[in-house]
Image (cartoon, rainbow, N blue to C red; front, top):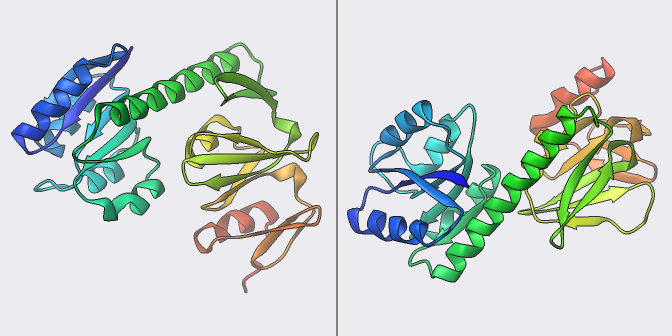
Length: 239
């Protein structure tokens, strides 16, 4: 069961959202909020797994609200505006729904959230059991065991990831964001070098000013991630 809240400044839209949530068996609606400030208070006082939120709201928009959260629950954006879709991917939201939302599309987003929640719980359980050499990826309705030392690098494809392995030339494709997957991996073994690339430190063969090499594969280093390379090598390659 996922504890969730609904946030929208329009009463009719909030009522429709509440009605849709009550139709999903594994959702428990903890509260409805008319703005992001009410939602913040609810998050501080309760254990919330999932937030349904509109973007255009007075005072604090849905996107601004997500950026303020230190510990983020899963978020599904529901809005009348399509143009914010790209921004939402950078904020690692579960899904982006455009009003009016058909119930089947709403259910698909909720199922995706449930799948991510299950995967996170599975990986947390594995970590607690001291099985820290692997994690699980949800692929085609199965949980696939992946060993950390088998990973070369991971590529983001918006709300999908492509995991490139040492043991096979065929990458694993899973439906989740790179940021979510990054949270499941040990920071001592993996680094983020670009908004689209996360890689195994042990797999690095060479580093240049604006790129990292894994065997003969060259991956770009993003502008905002250059400090990561400096910390890793102890040298500033940009001087």
